[in-house]
Length: 281
Length: 281
Image (cartoon, rainbow over all chains, first blue to last red; front, side, top):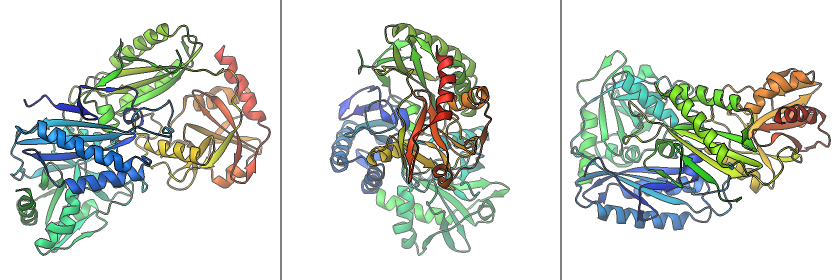
């Protein structure tokens, strides 16, 4: 079954999206990447809260609560259909749907809900091997009004991920317009330095990750650390005791190298990963 | 026929886009909005040059020249099919096509070419009545690496256009992150002040419009003006002798009001519009 994703549009199995759609035309929509373990979505509330906040910020008017209810129903449907898959990634996309030509959204948009389920081969309980981290030349744009949201305008991360691959690295560090470290292309960044756990604030750019939130609210306190938001330079990374990143599919992944620096041990990342595992089972 | 667009995907008539597609997933692609007069695209070279530059910047690798050739063929096909339409808007979208899950583009992408043709009812030779201009609270993000391109990440303009409508205005002025005027939601901005024709530089944000380019290279010189790039504040707009904007569908459209200011006459915009008309026939 792997390799052939299962796709739903508004609760019906499909293979294609009716055109036009404002998600394609303008990136007018939001998405979530959900890790599913034997039909069970991990941390569903964190994803749904971010999505609901995004719908409100993008002003999907009057339909938000209805859209959220439909999202819930359709995720349940998709999860039931992939019961036989041990691990799956669900890409949930909500677009503002069809609309007349032009940037202005229709007065009464009919959002579309697209779910693409892909079977995952590897065991997502095991922590991934430490990543080689390159530096992306493309930076995050500065846009406080949309920072944090997982909207569909993701070209910068596409270019950063391409640069990581070209550099032979696993991931790429992305800076903001001021040159501070913000994230990697697919996840939030953390460093450990002098016993402190630091992560860039998501104010001008970047995505407010679900696992980042969990680290800050639960997993770090559980191991006796208070995660703090801080302004981080590339030099701060290179001089850190430990570097790792978080996203919904890997959970937490340690960084093995960046710039001139290598890290062999990742005790804080491992301790946090144990907390993550504890919530998984 | 109006109201029902004609759609082509890779040269075949269709109504839907096979999923997944990176254009929807990440806004990984580019577009052009073409005005078509009885099967003839206006200023095709300007659109094709911008598209080709965009494909190169987004690193659609090895396929650019082939993609451009296919775009040309498929536009010809679409234009032949809508011969009976006096005026039409063609939305040409090029995405990086299908790809594996995740931000990184496939090593060998197969771009998709989508053309959506919409019949236009009004006479596109006549200059549109002067527009009421509101101020959008959403600003352009700052992203020098992508400024100028007509890529698919257009959420800021969607929100600005929504604000224009909510304000009862025809268009909304969009500022950059530093608070300078950059454009309106759907076009480039010009002001006339003390006999000078000024337009914001497209350096950190905004789209390098085809009609903006024509104004600067041809139409302004033809009426004895040199269009200059300048840093413009909202106060500069309010104190200007004339304000107008440009895009591919309206050509040039004068602004009737902004902030506390109203303009009744638009002699420079009208003179430039005559130049535009001269190239249309």
